[in-house]
Length: 244
Image (cartoon, rainbow, N blue to C red; front, top):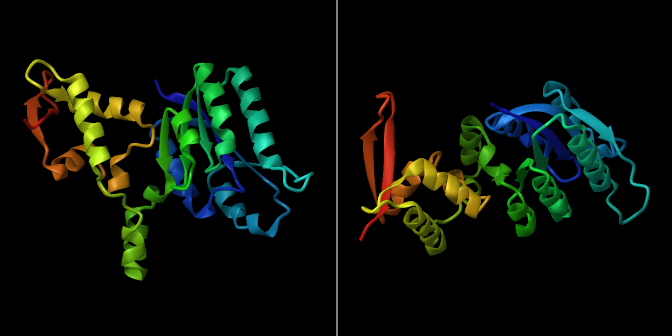
Protein backbone atom coordinates (compact mmCIF):
# COMPACT_ATOMS: atom_id res chain seq x y z
CA UNK A 1 0.00 0.00 0.00
CA UNK A 2 1.26 3.45 -0.94
CA UNK A 3 2.22 5.85 1.81
CA UNK A 4 -0.05 8.84 2.27
CA UNK A 5 2.41 11.70 2.30
CA UNK A 6 2.34 15.27 3.55
CA UNK A 7 4.68 17.33 1.37
CA UNK A 8 5.89 20.46 3.18
CA UNK A 9 8.17 22.80 1.22
CA UNK A 10 10.34 25.59 2.61
CA UNK A 11 9.75 28.20 -0.11
CA UNK A 12 12.54 30.42 1.18
CA UNK A 13 15.09 27.64 0.83
CA UNK A 14 14.35 25.68 -2.36
CA UNK A 15 14.74 26.88 -6.00
CA UNK A 16 11.40 26.94 -7.84
CA UNK A 17 12.80 25.29 -10.99
CA UNK A 18 13.04 21.90 -9.25
CA UNK A 19 9.38 21.52 -8.26
CA UNK A 20 8.17 19.46 -11.23
CA UNK A 21 10.99 16.93 -10.79
CA UNK A 22 10.54 16.87 -7.01
CA UNK A 23 6.87 16.00 -7.27
CA UNK A 24 7.62 13.24 -9.80
CA UNK A 25 10.25 11.82 -7.43
CA UNK A 26 7.93 11.98 -4.42
CA UNK A 27 5.24 10.07 -6.35
CA UNK A 28 7.61 7.06 -6.44
CA UNK A 29 7.31 6.69 -2.67
CA UNK A 30 3.64 7.39 -2.04
CA UNK A 31 0.57 9.53 -2.66
CA UNK A 32 1.11 13.22 -1.77
CA UNK A 33 -2.29 13.88 -0.20
CA UNK A 34 -1.22 17.17 1.43
CA UNK A 35 1.01 19.62 -0.49
CA UNK A 36 1.93 22.93 1.10
CA UNK A 37 4.66 25.50 0.60
CA UNK A 38 5.61 28.14 3.15
CA UNK A 39 6.95 31.64 2.62
CA UNK A 40 6.26 35.36 2.65
CA UNK A 41 4.47 35.66 -0.69
CA UNK A 42 4.58 39.46 -0.52
CA UNK A 43 8.30 39.26 -1.31
CA UNK A 44 9.17 39.79 -5.02
CA UNK A 45 11.66 36.91 -5.05
CA UNK A 46 8.84 34.37 -4.48
CA UNK A 47 6.65 35.65 -7.35
CA UNK A 48 8.04 33.07 -9.80
CA UNK A 49 6.37 30.32 -7.76
CA UNK A 50 2.80 31.31 -8.77
CA UNK A 51 2.35 29.29 -11.98
CA UNK A 52 4.36 26.37 -10.64
CA UNK A 53 2.09 26.05 -7.61
CA UNK A 54 -1.04 26.11 -9.77
CA UNK A 55 0.34 23.44 -12.12
CA UNK A 56 1.24 21.13 -9.25
CA UNK A 57 -1.77 21.86 -6.97
CA UNK A 58 0.47 23.01 -4.11
CA UNK A 59 -1.17 25.26 -1.50
CA UNK A 60 0.85 28.37 -0.58
CA UNK A 61 0.86 29.25 3.12
CA UNK A 62 1.50 32.92 3.84
CA UNK A 63 3.93 33.59 6.67
CA UNK A 64 5.10 37.11 7.42
CA UNK A 65 8.54 37.67 8.87
CA UNK A 66 7.48 39.33 12.10
CA UNK A 67 10.96 39.67 13.58
CA UNK A 68 14.17 40.45 11.74
CA UNK A 69 16.68 37.61 11.99
CA UNK A 70 14.03 35.01 12.90
CA UNK A 71 12.77 32.48 10.37
CA UNK A 72 8.99 32.56 10.69
CA UNK A 73 8.63 30.17 7.72
CA UNK A 74 10.40 27.39 9.62
CA UNK A 75 8.15 27.87 12.66
CA UNK A 76 4.95 27.78 10.59
CA UNK A 77 6.07 24.63 8.77
CA UNK A 78 6.97 22.87 12.03
CA UNK A 79 3.64 23.78 13.67
CA UNK A 80 1.71 22.55 10.63
CA UNK A 81 3.70 19.30 10.58
CA UNK A 82 2.74 18.56 14.18
CA UNK A 83 -0.93 19.38 13.48
CA UNK A 84 -0.87 17.00 10.51
CA UNK A 85 0.83 14.33 12.60
CA UNK A 86 -1.90 14.42 15.23
CA UNK A 87 -4.65 14.47 12.58
CA UNK A 88 -3.56 10.92 11.59
CA UNK A 89 -4.36 11.67 7.93
CA UNK A 90 -0.94 10.60 6.65
CA UNK A 91 1.71 7.99 7.45
CA UNK A 92 4.69 9.78 5.95
CA UNK A 93 6.20 13.23 5.42
CA UNK A 94 8.34 14.82 2.71
CA UNK A 95 10.29 17.72 4.15
CA UNK A 96 11.69 19.83 1.34
CA UNK A 97 14.44 22.11 2.60
CA UNK A 98 18.20 22.46 2.87
CA UNK A 99 17.90 23.92 6.36
CA UNK A 100 19.24 22.12 9.44
CA UNK A 101 16.44 23.73 11.51
CA UNK A 102 14.22 20.81 10.49
CA UNK A 103 16.49 18.16 12.02
CA UNK A 104 14.52 17.93 15.27
CA UNK A 105 11.22 17.86 13.37
CA UNK A 106 12.37 14.91 11.23
CA UNK A 107 13.52 13.07 14.35
CA UNK A 108 10.23 13.73 16.14
CA UNK A 109 8.14 12.52 13.20
CA UNK A 110 10.15 9.30 12.96
CA UNK A 111 9.73 8.75 16.70
CA UNK A 112 5.97 8.88 16.06
CA UNK A 113 6.28 6.11 13.46
CA UNK A 114 6.22 8.32 10.38
CA UNK A 115 8.36 7.65 7.31
CA UNK A 116 10.36 10.83 6.63
CA UNK A 117 11.79 11.61 3.20
CA UNK A 118 13.97 14.68 2.90
CA UNK A 119 14.74 16.60 -0.28
CA UNK A 120 17.24 19.42 -0.47
CA UNK A 121 20.35 20.77 -2.14
CA UNK A 122 23.80 19.26 -1.68
CA UNK A 123 24.60 22.02 0.80
CA UNK A 124 22.14 20.44 3.28
CA UNK A 125 23.83 19.86 6.68
CA UNK A 126 24.55 16.25 7.65
CA UNK A 127 22.37 16.22 10.82
CA UNK A 128 19.18 16.88 8.82
CA UNK A 129 20.12 14.19 6.28
CA UNK A 130 20.80 11.65 9.04
CA UNK A 131 17.46 12.43 10.71
CA UNK A 132 15.51 11.26 7.61
CA UNK A 133 14.74 7.72 6.45
CA UNK A 134 15.82 8.76 2.99
CA UNK A 135 17.36 11.98 1.68
CA UNK A 136 17.43 12.96 -2.00
CA UNK A 137 19.54 15.73 -3.49
CA UNK A 138 17.40 17.82 -5.82
CA UNK A 139 20.34 18.46 -8.16
CA UNK A 140 20.06 14.88 -9.47
CA UNK A 141 16.38 15.23 -10.37
CA UNK A 142 16.64 17.31 -13.51
CA UNK A 143 15.04 15.57 -16.49
CA UNK A 144 17.32 14.14 -19.16
CA UNK A 145 16.21 16.76 -21.68
CA UNK A 146 17.16 19.50 -19.25
CA UNK A 147 20.44 17.75 -18.44
CA UNK A 148 21.41 17.70 -22.10
CA UNK A 149 20.60 21.41 -22.39
CA UNK A 150 22.72 22.12 -19.35
CA UNK A 151 25.61 20.13 -20.79
CA UNK A 152 25.33 22.05 -24.04
CA UNK A 153 25.52 25.34 -22.16
CA UNK A 154 28.19 24.23 -19.72
CA UNK A 155 29.52 20.67 -19.76
CA UNK A 156 31.89 21.30 -16.89
CA UNK A 157 29.15 22.67 -14.64
CA UNK A 158 26.95 19.64 -15.29
CA UNK A 159 29.75 17.18 -14.55
CA UNK A 160 30.65 18.95 -11.33
CA UNK A 161 27.33 17.85 -9.84
CA UNK A 162 28.32 14.14 -10.04
CA UNK A 163 30.04 12.87 -6.91
CA UNK A 164 33.22 10.81 -7.11
CA UNK A 165 33.13 7.16 -6.05
CA UNK A 166 35.54 7.37 -3.14
CA UNK A 167 37.16 4.53 -1.15
CA UNK A 168 34.68 5.38 1.62
CA UNK A 169 31.75 4.67 -0.73
CA UNK A 170 33.33 1.42 -1.92
CA UNK A 171 33.91 0.32 1.67
CA UNK A 172 30.29 1.13 2.56
CA UNK A 173 29.04 -1.10 -0.26
CA UNK A 174 31.52 -3.88 0.57
CA UNK A 175 30.67 -3.99 4.27
CA UNK A 176 26.94 -3.91 3.49
CA UNK A 177 27.31 -6.90 1.16
CA UNK A 178 29.29 -8.72 3.86
CA UNK A 179 26.57 -7.95 6.42
CA UNK A 180 23.95 -9.69 4.26
CA UNK A 181 26.02 -12.43 2.61
CA UNK A 182 25.19 -16.13 2.76
CA UNK A 183 27.82 -18.81 3.36
CA UNK A 184 29.13 -18.38 -0.19
CA UNK A 185 29.38 -14.60 0.12
CA UNK A 186 26.36 -13.77 -2.08
CA UNK A 187 23.80 -11.12 -1.11
CA UNK A 188 20.56 -10.17 -2.85
CA UNK A 189 21.03 -6.75 -4.44
CA UNK A 190 17.60 -5.52 -3.35
CA UNK A 191 18.50 -6.17 0.29
CA UNK A 192 21.87 -4.47 -0.22
CA UNK A 193 20.16 -1.35 -1.56
CA UNK A 194 17.73 -1.23 1.35
CA UNK A 195 20.48 -1.60 3.95
CA UNK A 196 22.65 1.04 2.25
CA UNK A 197 19.70 3.41 2.55
CA UNK A 198 19.33 2.69 6.25
CA UNK A 199 23.04 3.17 6.90
CA UNK A 200 23.30 6.35 4.84
CA UNK A 201 19.97 8.08 4.03
CA UNK A 202 21.47 10.16 1.19
CA UNK A 203 22.99 7.14 -0.61
CA UNK A 204 21.69 7.23 -4.18
CA UNK A 205 23.32 5.80 -7.29
CA UNK A 206 22.25 8.94 -9.18
CA UNK A 207 24.65 10.97 -7.04
CA UNK A 208 27.45 9.16 -8.90
CA UNK A 209 25.93 9.44 -12.38
CA UNK A 210 24.13 6.06 -12.49
CA UNK A 211 20.37 5.61 -12.70
CA UNK A 212 20.46 2.26 -10.86
CA UNK A 213 22.60 0.48 -8.27
CA UNK A 214 23.64 -2.40 -10.58
CA UNK A 215 25.64 -0.29 -13.09
CA UNK A 216 27.21 1.63 -10.20
CA UNK A 217 28.46 -1.60 -8.63
CA UNK A 218 29.63 -2.93 -12.02
CA UNK A 219 31.65 0.24 -12.64
CA UNK A 220 33.66 -0.20 -9.44
CA UNK A 221 35.12 -3.54 -10.49
CA UNK A 222 35.51 -4.94 -6.96
CA UNK A 223 32.30 -6.97 -6.86
CA UNK A 224 30.97 -10.07 -8.61
CA UNK A 225 27.44 -10.01 -10.03
CA UNK A 226 25.23 -13.04 -10.65
CA UNK A 227 21.83 -12.97 -12.37
CA UNK A 228 19.50 -15.77 -11.33
CA UNK A 229 16.09 -16.90 -12.50
CA UNK A 230 13.20 -15.76 -10.34
CA UNK A 231 10.92 -18.55 -9.01
CA UNK A 232 8.07 -16.75 -10.75
CA UNK A 233 10.08 -16.62 -13.97
CA UNK A 234 9.29 -13.01 -14.82
CA UNK A 235 12.35 -11.18 -13.57
CA UNK A 236 16.04 -11.84 -13.07
CA UNK A 237 17.25 -11.73 -9.47
CA UNK A 238 20.60 -10.01 -9.07
CA UNK A 239 23.08 -11.14 -6.41
CA UNK A 240 26.43 -9.56 -5.58
CA UNK A 241 29.48 -10.51 -3.56
CA UNK A 242 32.86 -9.07 -2.74
CA UNK A 243 35.75 -10.28 -4.86
CA UNK A 244 38.26 -12.19 -2.78
